Image 1: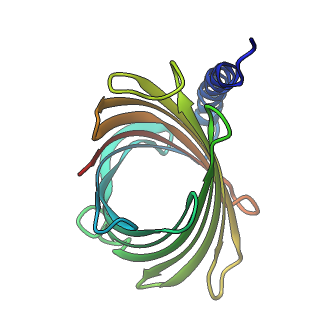
Image 2 (image 1 turned 180 degrees about the horizontal axis):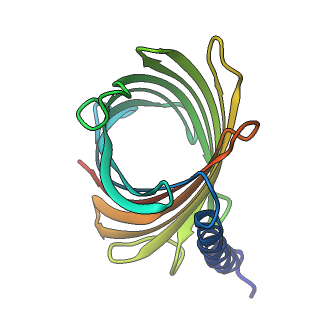
Length: 238
């Protein structure tokens, strides 16, 4: 008998392979253009429950240049400390509030540090093997030069690379596309697009490691900047 779950798994693998080929091809094209910047971004995250409905996630992200001004260059740009508190609503929906502090002064004194507040709604749907997620975010980026209000929508798809579930010792994939709108007093609105592809590995029942690229096109209506992130993340839960 034809299995919808097997079909979903096959389509998931094919979709992710296409995603990686597209990102790799786009990277070569972007690097040949002007206004291209490349980053390395490792991170560690820990999630834990405060009650059956309330959980928190704490993370540290380090961002380092590896390519800018048409040359390879390793230089740290910033360190982010992040804390999210999440409340589980009915079904597969969550409401979250986050606070983030971006340390820029130790690395780029002229840039200044940043405090970021986030409000988020997330909903997921898993009809078979693949899971679909819709995330809506509002952010306030508070800096000495002024506050930027940012509004974001992300569509994400993920699934196992083998079988119907991701067990310990098995791999999974994540692909996402996100649109962003940034507005600030005295400035024109800015529109961004981000495409991300991850490969993850469930190391234990409570920990996983994942890596992959993210491509960003920033400021569509102006002088568009092309940015590529190579990301590596360790995620644990208690």
